Image 1: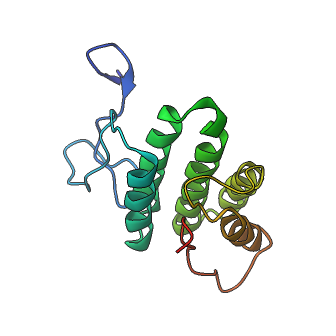
Image 2: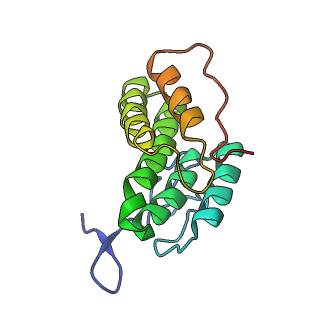
Length: 150
């Protein structure tokens, strides 16, 4: 099967997606996703990602955080990578993949924990504690934390 490509030849998946980011058959009606060329500032990325997490759309929050990761200064890239992994871990949790969720949340916690204090008012300790609770099998699953200190 031929892959979807953009004008520059980069692979793109143009298939529609469900609310948790799973590809649907071509022609199916999916939910809107973030554009591949999304440009965000740290504050707008955190606000949009938080809104998406609050709406139960962690896959979409991951897309926003990934865009921030790709445009972040080198000194912050691993933090944003960890935040994106946190959202992907939550996506796996919602999909029922506890093993995948634990692996991603563990890596996310390690990355986020390396930033103390975290820039942009990011609640590093709270996010790390939440991710570690999930990887330890907390039941019931604690509510999704706030990305930023309030």
